[in-house]
Length: 271
Length: 269
Image (cartoon, rainbow over the protein chains, first blue to last red):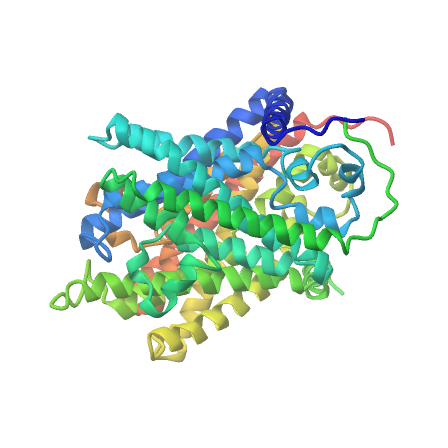
């Protein structure tokens, strides 16, 4: 009789698999060190340009919607690093729809691992390492940022990254139902990133409910900002709960879609 | 047909082929239209928040709320419409396609210019029309009050687009010397964004403004946007400076291409 793995053993095995995927992906990208460094520093520079914009604007206007320069930079640190972390670990998250569309899931279906986790984590995005690092650079340059805040920041990154990855994965999974979800998933990604990077208060009250449902900028940027500013660990369970909810939702949508998946009879290998 | 006519016909054909190609895959352009609209929406809210926070303050650095939003609408057109030549140009340099194109009976720079601008001009005009509709929705009346001003805005946009092309072409040609040159474009792109696209030059610190005017960056977005919101004696000056930089950028491209082409080695058939 085959012994079933316990839940704890399954989790450990899953984490070992994630670590192995991460290690392989990392080795693949640093094989081309020059390209890796150019993309990482290029992305940090890209993000840094917006800091100059905000500095120039706020020096002329004072705070915007109650947000000062420090608040904006904290939002950038949170969003950039959690977006980066999501794409460093789950690099295929924005390509999932295309993989489904092209019938390229076959190769993952045959492997003895969870299909969604396997497909998402089988790649890393090089420029996302720059996004990830940028948040820490911002914190290092902000005066008066404490070690306690850094610990909280790390925790907030986890929930933010899970919510980012889950929202993108759910949008991409619509490909199972629609054939191509490129338009809608690009729109959701654009909206989510754009709304997360600007002060919540500039948007009308009537539309802010969207930030806590369909486009969870509230859980990625606005609530974490409030937690970070007041060093409020009490908000962490709420954010982790939200991350769990979005993760479960994305997973359920993917599994429901997978039942509709038709193989492309594609021959492929993963090396 | 005289020689000049044949020459013009050749480049007009390149522009027309590129235009028809773009029209055949128009769906790809919808993403740009969508993102442009999203940015206008977000920035209209930001400027709304800035001015509503200080009701007594009618202007900041000489701009009121309506001017700031219209400025952004026009300034983003060259960035969206003419901002992405670099990748295909750099790819031609890196892949060796340049060696293949050199043997053809046209100017390498002229051919790429016609091909790139053919579709970019149409896209920019569509973006401008979309921007005007959104501006009417978020702000109210158009800032352009005369046909002469409208013509000046269009000319300035075309000069800005041509300058964008030539500067990106010069950057792409650094591939003759550097294996990976994308980072140069990223730096260029971000400087262009900060210096006059997201906010008017007048919002920058005085020293940064002086420095900015020593570069072509204010001419890529600031010039057409400024002409659109304030048509005055400075408008003609901006157009002249744009034209002068265009001539300088064309000379730079010729020089770089002349030096760079000596580094091309072609083998086999």
